Amino acid sequence: MTGREGELERLHSVVSQLMAGGTERHVLITGLRGVGKTVLLNEFEVICQEAGWPAETKEIGRGTSLSTLVGRSARKALLQMSARKRAGEVLGRALSVLKAFEMTVGDTSFKIDVEASVGIADSGDLIEDLRDLFVAVGEAAQEAGLGFALILDEVQNLSRDDYEALIMALHRAKQRRLPVAFVGAGLPLIPKLTAEAKSYAERMFVYPSIGQLPEPAAREALVKPAEQQGVSWDAKGVKKVLAYTEGYPYLIQEYGRRAWALNSGRQISLADTLAAKALVEADLDESFFEGRIGRLTNAERAYASAMAALGDGPQQSGQVAELLGRKQSSLSTVRDDLMRSAVIYSPRRGLVDFTVPHCAAYVRRSYPPETRPPDDSGPSKSG
Image (cartoon, rainbow, N blue to C red):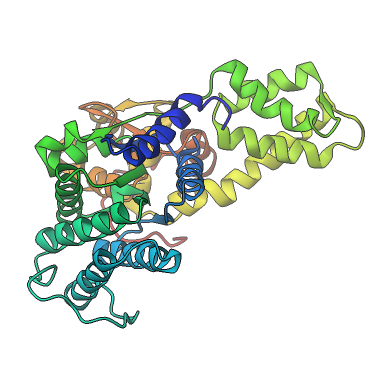
């Protein structure tokens, strides 16, 4: 949580404002991979639980059914409210609405021993039924003196139809001033996807963007855990780590872990730090990068290789096409597929960049640029 004090204050505010009967905008945390978005979601889950709210972080995969995911979250919340015996008739009605929802568009693998409601959350239209469900669960939470929190990771994986339905359901709950909170996280393209899904959504959300830690916070994240165990860092070693990790929390964590394992005394020496770098790169290559780049098609990997060959940071998509000897328009499908798989994103019109820090350096090490233009969209022999 080092360096994320502002984001934590925002998350606490969501719960405190709704508990007081007020309203608060929903939160969509954006950033590249490895900057700590999921850690913040988990912290919000703890904040909710400390306030007595049922809450559980769920990750959206490609092809995830929103109706199933929300239905399970609502079921768990309502059953926890029932166990507390703090709600009555309204809770029973919410359970009936949930059963109708699950029988119509959700997941019927869980049985609820109540009669399904008729005419509510049973139309088969996800937008209408999800709105009914959010209102019913929000009213039950309000009666119980609690709140309902939906916490979703990898929001960019939602289909446009599912995302639109979610936004409209949240909007209805907000109009009714119900204690329903949504905190999500995803890649930097989330604000654009949100605006495309529903124009008025811009007023419903705040978009804290998290990235590299400033130098003091990065230093504290590296040094303080060791100090708490009575171990110091060599000053030159700290500079090496900070230069390599560039303030990215996940890289700091991995480097610190490897250097700690090599240390045999009361100080992590410069020699420990230098030896740890090769281990860190090997770990990242295997667990962080290869899982994303290794599964690409030949054409996608050639595009990624061309991006990396141009250098670190955002690149002009036109220059990528030029390096590949292709017209920019002929590569639009490859580029869009890479964006859909969240390997790259567009920070601004005409620019492309990797979603994972240090990914360009990995691609240069492991996948040199193709010597011919990519004309094969199928999987590579190694993939």
